Length: 323
Image (cartoon, rainbow, N blue to C red):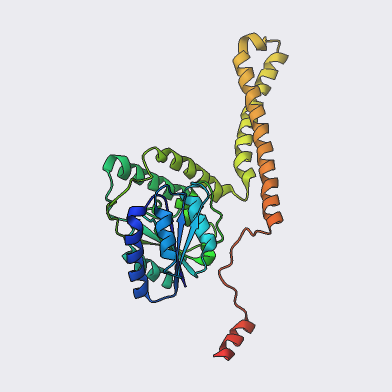
């Protein structure tokens, strides 16, 4: 079964055309499916149009959020509601062509866990969108170690067990492949169309580039130090304590030799003391982080690993006998 998850916000001009194209493509795919629209507190007639469609299509489900929580939260709500073994997410503004869904599903059928769309030929403004996007994608690739050209697009297909193991918050939806790679997900990239926007206004601008930069820093920390925060804070703390201790030891020797420390080396004394204090704070932060991680995993029963499959001789025989 397929679940198509589509977050929308003020997309009344595109909804009916998107629905018509989706149903045509999904009928051709010839698999059971469900359509899940998440209305992120639209102020236009988006929800009204979807509510009317629900009355005529039992495979359609509409989730209306209480306020505008953002795209990541809307996607998370759709993923939680999805019942399909394969989940496809896409935007609701017709800048993702439903006709590209078979290409994404083909990669899933080949054994990949995630098929990620790649807007190879982008129809965007060069200065305001293309250049910042290329820089951000390059940084994301380096930070995550996942070799993708296009992290920003929502148009992706996932195996259900992969996406449901990922907790989304903030604006981390663009980093789902990187977060899934932490648990060993196999990822493929599929070129997709990037039709020009036919109506409404884009919800993205160059101002969000700064948010992406902050998210990249968060991603790097999550992927490398999530389960061992002391390795991050401890290294900084050790460096500060070492340098600060060396400065204070040097000044102590000068003091023993009878030199005036405060007047001659006041700034250096201040720097040494500050570095020592910062180092101790970093060590403390690392220890608190370690305790929080253990509390998180143990209290919620979460695992720090993910199992792809389990095979035993008994199960193999039982499967053979059942044929």
